Image: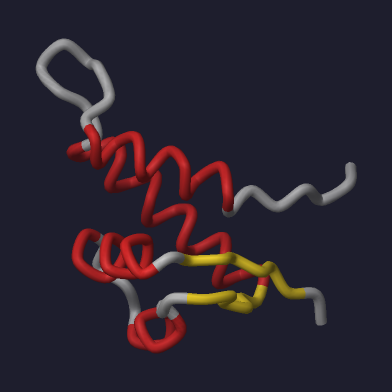
Length: 84
């Protein structure tokens, strides 16, 4: 089964754990270093980042906040190219 590898710094891991409502299985995997996610877990994490970005990633002028920039970076890093 194909996996998605995500390299997380300590700051990355803290950001994800403190800003997203992660399900237990994902919470257990989020730690500094290379994290191997099943493709459905990577999709779920990307969806959570997207939802949080929509909720609080922009200021009153619709400019990205610092958290929004981090969320966008994670969304990009979690993109899975299906090769289609």
